Length: 512
Image (cartoon, rainbow, N blue to C red; front, side, top):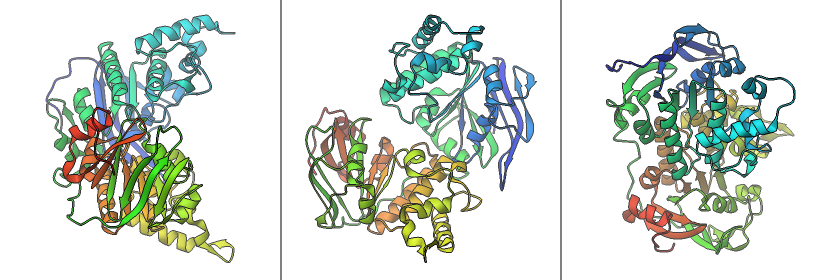
């Protein structure tokens, strides 16, 4: 499938017939894409489709096994990250690559100081600050060049990354899930910057699983599936359903969310009364029932994650009481929570949910390692059996359970996080942003697994910033605003307008 629109602007980039092999897997097979000056190209595909590998080849992190790259019509060999930067190619990763202990100026020019100013010897700090000030004004960052990056919000850090790219005189900027951790206001500001960059003739590759963003921002959409090029869509041709069908190879429009059952709610599993979390103005109360998916909604900074960390024992409560199955529950550590069957799949799976250099099997056994001990040694056979069962249950895409988790896509990493907890038979499973950065196909699978777990009587708490997810998956929704609970909505009370009114503090709802 291709567009019929004729491209009148000059081509900045062509990647032709790109193939990349890793041990046991072909990550890319004969993939070709094009990017014009002043164009926003959305690169879409499920996790594991090859998007990140293709962009790492463009950014110089990998060399292709086959194929060629042309910039402005001229063949180039990008043998490293420095070569890519020298050619005007900048990658802005989902995990921002900034040094928090340095200020804005130092981060903008880090590793590029002399190249940016064409001089040797000591660098004049004033000149660096002046140029940094020009760049941060261009991206609309309201901060001084001497501001420590550690004091900035995630959205402001994103602007520093863009300023870094502009300092390289980048002609091509790749943005990987740029709004994953941004507030709505920060996202809108980013979209304004993207429009300015497009006007300046910069070509942008925009990777996102948020279809509304893609449809609003992109001029053209290129879809990959299983390491192969599927086709292009002009924005005028694109629909949510059409993009999803190209990505997953099947129509998900009728079964994106599992059909809700009419099962009656079970007994209360977890009950929190007047629980005080550090930073909260007063105690909060809520409960979770067996077989229920309880959504926790709220804007970034509303206290959702902090509350769940207290339930999981990361930060002990300052007051109030909790019970689990009617018995007192006051975990002082995550280990105490785990021993009672309360598990947390954290928002930041790479830093807090997994040990990336370890294998799938090792990550699966790690939280319950003592149960795999036999006569003082680790029972590898049992470890392999359990890990294999969880990979099959969650349909994790991997050549082997001995694959290192760092080499998996984001969606498959999330499945490993779920698998390690499911192997331990949870009583309450807390999922903090369970589908952030995950493609629609993997989302649909995770939703089906969540529904199946609820059917088994597990109490599920889902913290989510995705309104569609909150409305589509929750049996009840607890809505937080400024670290207090503003209301609890039953399924028949749910609507986007009611949740939004509570999230923003302009309305009050019934208590738990």
